[in-house]
Length: 514
Image 1 (cartoon, rainbow, N blue to C red):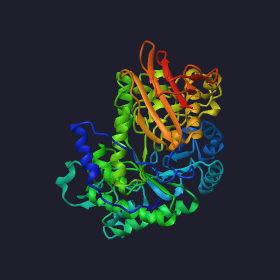
Image 2 (cartoon, one colour):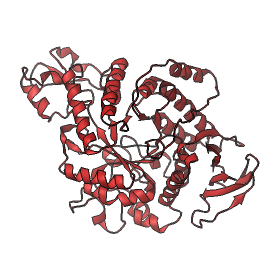
Image 3 (cartoon, rainbow, N blue to C red):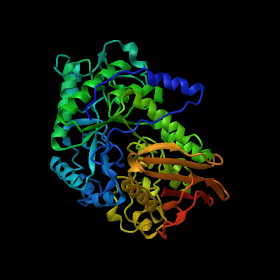
């Protein structure tokens, strides 16, 4: 997966062209396809504190994740993204105090080693959040730097004596500078005062963070989700150069290690990152999909995805897009879709069958809800509706246990959980769905969705209706085998269909052309 950056203007030109007219997009056909790679898997984002507790303190931990690997494997998950697990000041872990120590609530390095070993036995890759844009203000380096101007760690952070900068805004529109106690000096902290930014104009800082990456790669971690990847520097070109050096270093240690970036912006502003990172999340795809479902206008979903993916692949054809619906920084997708299970099933059927490596946020498969503040979108995973000892209680849950809890959904063959499980395992069984090419399918109108995935001789159609009445779709002439239907999940019956397919209201259908 080692990649050298090559700058292509074409991606930017394509973005401009898309604004003015609809252009034909031909997807790049993969040179090689292997289930051993990152591409095509389904990943699962875990907030460890909220997931599962192994030692009775009702706080999730690494041993708890290990104990639930069978659940994830059965769901069809083939990759895990661990939100921050290192020692930190805040509950969420995005303000690191010690890069080499595991949060005491979560366990220790030995627990991480066991998790990696057990996950790899199940062919589940594990990536971890790497938060290197900033540290906690409780990090020993910063504590020494703020007390001693002559400290060797002073230049690990960014300082100014210009007190007029106190009201200066960062590129994120936050207050950029914080005062160092009562001293007439400021330090740069773009996210908030408790997260001072590191100074990457100092080569020693970059060297130290490379060593942090090496430490976890040597332990067996499969890669990193790179928090705030857009803000290492405030200049894009310096950012690109930094991540190019970083990925070269990481890939020199493990060629197959994957770097997944958080670069939250419009596609044409971030496409160059596809030349230096292996993958990143495109926030526009999830928003496009949920908006389309809510407005019942599904006609542009596939075209949007194709256009965005093509833009990134012009930077590097090995780049892997990571579609998702929502994550730990956003209102949960169940809320976005009005707590409508049928809409959730449509959204899942589409994004979990797109090319690339889809990510789902823990509890999404149960239909967990949550809106800001952040703690409410990071509530405990609900394993049981009756046995509270099975659920963490780092914070109380506002989700209705009798409706959302896994034990209840296991009893219902038509539950959202059962639908997710069927979709993900179907993707794992068919290369057309995991690594095949993507084509749009013409439908009678925008309330009917259609796309096709193709790999060699295998052609699979994903169809979905948001119409209030029966609708017919004419596919290519042939006989079609029903792989999955939202109407027949409980029965599990196999059916054969001709090319004229009728969908009942709100039906989702996945068929294989014989």
